[in-house]
Image (cartoon, rainbow, N blue to C red; front, side, top):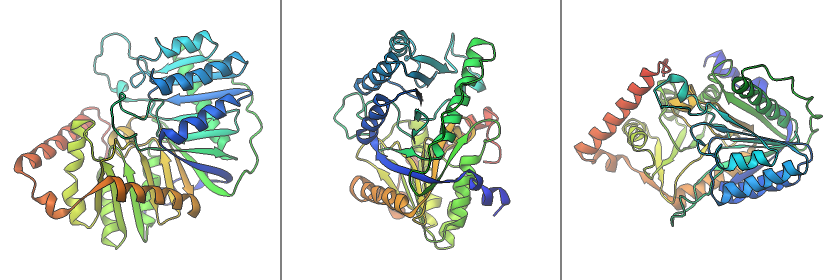
Length: 394
């Protein structure tokens, strides 16, 4: 294992944190809204999607009320994922005193530019510099357009303790960058950070971000380091799974040395090209002994993993070229047997009760047309990545 992988995330870990795992919006939004309702000084919220639906309006109401009582409230959304926000809920929030900005807004005619692919995909909330939320849950209804389907399957984590200060710093940093780009001039220095919270628990955790400067491969390298060190078990649940060559080789090598490798992937067709491109990877994985399950109860939106029952990650980063090479992402990485065990038990329930195992013999019996579609989809995705010149040695 290279030194870069061996040392990935090591210096980022802080102890003394208290973490709570939140499964899907049913647990996440009440916790976030309660924290915003209790805010005294400042709220930062970053989201890829902030929808004008019942959930979005509930969160917006909490943010607006906080601003009206004198709390500094800052909301940053992505210009593609939340392209209708500024003229809708954003305008209403601004009228209540909320500071609203858009990351890379879609302006004018939509011409192809590589920078348009760099999205703000993080989902972060920080309240009073003392409570933070990290995960993969966008601000929108769990249910898809009110249809009779089960809720999106996703996770977030609430955090108290020393790590909150680092999450706060990255939120304020990106806010200043976007403000600078939006106003065309350097913003004033930020107000001093509030005193960092003291020890709230015993959990060792790190925040890893992905950007286009110093942290281009931090999340990917943390995954790879943990996979290389794995001795017993790797469980990955990921909505959009299209790993590069290094990642695929690491999983296959782990399976070869006797590690139990399980993948929980998207079973419903959400994005046709990516769905079939992912299926093109099944043959090699299944032949190596990797178990593949497709989540069918609803839409899988999780980006989590548990390795050897003590290492876990929850965040916004998919395992695909767009998350690993282009978007701003944020993942929490945890070293704690109790937290990893709770996440592992939740994934077990999803695998056993809401998923279908893809068996090698069944997959081999697919029609030639299905195989052709999967191969063509994979090739097209790789071409698109190559055209952007972000592919590297994936």
